Image (cartoon, rainbow, N blue to C red):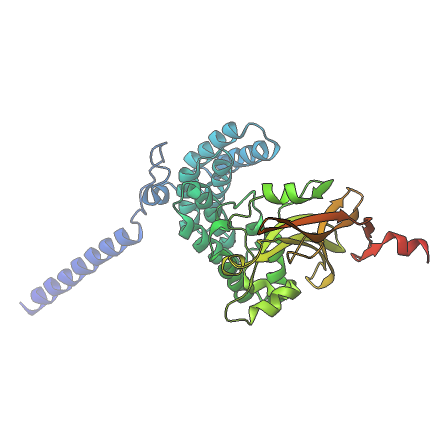
Length: 383
């Protein structure tokens, strides 16, 4: 009896061990998530994308390379988009979605580009700062109607903080035209640049200041008619940039500054220096008590933002000051001609009217030298 019970016990133990082995074996051999290929309508759903990661990598890469090559050569961007999507349908990758987003932005399909970037981000595209840059680019173009401006600045800030290698791209008006209308753009850009990658604050400030000057076509003449025909709009210079305008530094410490400063245009830029025009005019409070006058200044700077030279070249700061007319040629030779104002009182009965006569003074000829200095040409003659 004892032997029978002992054998029965051993058989039960063996049955249990066999059952456990089957269970453990089945766990080790359990299949992973089922491969489900993507469809044209599911390529932007991240859960569907992850279920399609087991596709044919070699075939997908071949299509992706063809699409990238076609996109770079242009102009058939639409065909490259189709190839990018075919690559994704074979096997989705972070690079395919990122490259697709670039082609979609080029063809003004900004909403779909954002969807593609979202998947690229989820799949771990690197460097991530490039994804943030393209987010900003897409949202900026969507915000032309007034929306998404906050999103543009948000992704710009992230891109810079993550080390985007070409932050000056954000200063290009042709790429990011909308953000310049925002009063907080300069501040967000400067803080992100300095905090994100150890850039020099002064250099960052100069880059932003210079980016506000639109190139001016030469030859150019600034006279009374030109001044009246050019509206300044919201193109005023923030006191954050007062280090670049000497007169502005004095106003900066006044409780109620007397003047407003405006960007006028970029005359020229090269590896040695940049020459710009800005204007000064009284504030509305000051203008109410005086003749509303505008003065234009030509200024040159090194490529680090240090002032080389500054000269008033057009307009007038005060009613009885000489009115200056500025003329500059593509050769960067320019002239400044004064028109001196003289009062003449003529009486008619008990009324007295003040008549201002302007008499022309011979113009003074200058040139912008190779070092950015403004040199008088007559002075050069007698050297």
